[in-house]
Image 1 (tube, one colour):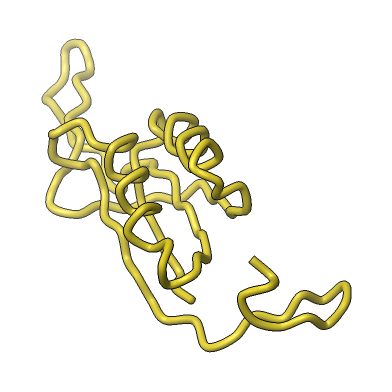
Image 2 (image 1 turned 135 degrees about the vertical axis):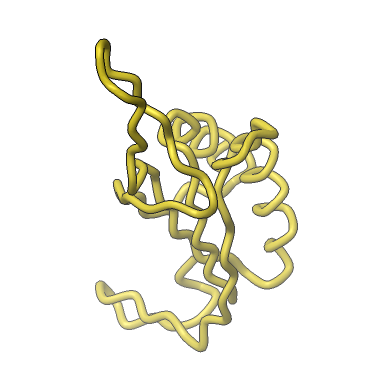
Length: 112
């Protein structure tokens, strides 16, 4: 199993969530987060110097997938979140050793 952590622009969340659901990935967790990579957002204030907002508002999506579903989930996230501009985000992938469903104690791939 793999854990996908995607940091994306806030306005792309609904597109990514719908795309994942349409592809069969209905279980996910989302968070409102702030951060930045190499970009900073300029904010102009009338009569003042341009300032830069830092950190920037983003959305984080966590999703656990079976190993053989990883590439399909990544394709969906990239297709739905990409604008081609700086700040589109990053995707982090980690191995998951095990998952336990609290309700019934079932473990492993059957839980996702």
